[in-house]
Every structure is written in structure tokens, then in C-alpha cells.
Length: 296
Image (cartoon, rainbow, N blue to C red):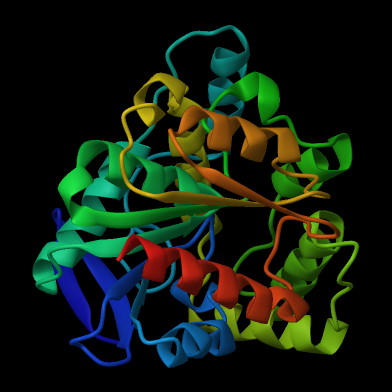
């Protein structure tokens, strides 16, 4: 895929659809690559009349690797957050929001519908807060306001997320590690086809895999303050999508996000966890496309 220099970072991206069509920019979550936005999902949005841009955040996929972080830093950050002390991090979610706007600048996109999942939802919120003129609409999926009291994962989800990842040299072990993770945080109402899931995960691991980058992204999340006061300034039409059975970011975090953004509409999906199961791709495409059309 092509790359651009944006905000001092090399960003690997893919653009699909008619370049004259309204643009949807997709921002993925923690440790996930652009291709975690499924091809069929993106193709569905293109069929709905949109140009779709998906990209690798810094420290994921084929985009730039940053420096710093580490497991010890992560444990210190969690302790500092618990003690309500400042959390040091190599970069911030605001920096990642600036990456997104820098990508839009490089591609000549003046305004876009911004859609983010999980950490990507946090970044999308910050794009709407910091750059309101660039956001035609906002869709925040399985994300939060940063209110830590409402964003606590279940014990099983926390253990699965923080379990040390295998080294990148052992591809099979990495794939099994990630399959196990999604087995914990995935959608109970839409059980995964294990072969299909394993295939998607292996494709991503073989494309790029860097657990150190994921730790740096996680540090940015932990260091981020509660965005609730700032979210009240968002004027872009907003859709909040959340799984009613999300064990990683509880549904109350989605409700809180919708309450915090003026006029936001909440779409709570029964049986959905913290993933994008294939059975829900048509539902999500329809909802996002309708929301973007109404905003346009």
C-alpha cells in the first residue's frame, strides 16, 4: 500500500472507491492494523457510495515505529493511573489524532466522516474535538470517554489483554495468542468461525507484528485524561455503536460516550463483544452509511 509523511510519521494507507465520493476515514484500535477493517466491510461502504480510507496507526502495521515504552513502563503507568498521578508515555492520543489529520492533509481531504473502533474511537473523538471543521460526522465504536470508572474490563478480559505476547519469530504462537485473546473479548452472540478468524489473524501477523508498539499505544491510552468535558463541544453528528456484551470496554462506557456528546445517537447491539464479527458487517455498514448520508 502507498505511504505518506504525516505529522512527522510515515503512514501506510489504502484508499478505496471513487475519489470524488464523500470520504470515510477508518481508525483502528489498539495493536490492530488497517486490514482489521475487513475487506468486505470496506467494500460495503464503497458500494454505498463512499470513498474509504483505512490506515495503519503509528506503531502498527507498516507505519512508523516509535521509541520508548516497555513492559516495565506499562506496570508503572498502571500504578500511576491508579494513584491518579501523571502517566509518562512516548506519545499521546492527541498525537495520533494529529497523525489522522496529517494523513487527510496529505491526501487532499478537506473534510471526512471519521469512524473509529476502540482506541480508534478515542482518536476519532479527539479529531472531532480539535479539528471540528474537518469532521462531517463522527462514529465511535466500542470506545469510551476515558472515564476510568466506567471503562473497567472484566477480570478475564484484563488478563487476556495483559498476558505477555510471544516473540514475533514464532508466528504460530503469536496467532494462537491472538486467537485466544479474541476468544475472550469476542462476541458471544456471534461466535467466530475459528478457521476464518485464524486466517484473518495470520494474515495480519505475517504482514506486521510488533508487541512493543502495542505497549506504546496502550501507554497513550492509559495516559489520556477523561475527555467528557471536551466531548460536550463536539458539533458533528455522532453515532455511538457498542456491544451489549463487550467484556473489554463495558456497554456503560458507550452509554457515557453518547450522553457526553450533544445529540449523539446510541446503537447498542445485543450479542456483540469487543470485535467486528462477520455476521454484523452488513448491519454496521448500513448503520454507518445511513449516518454519514444523513450528516452529508
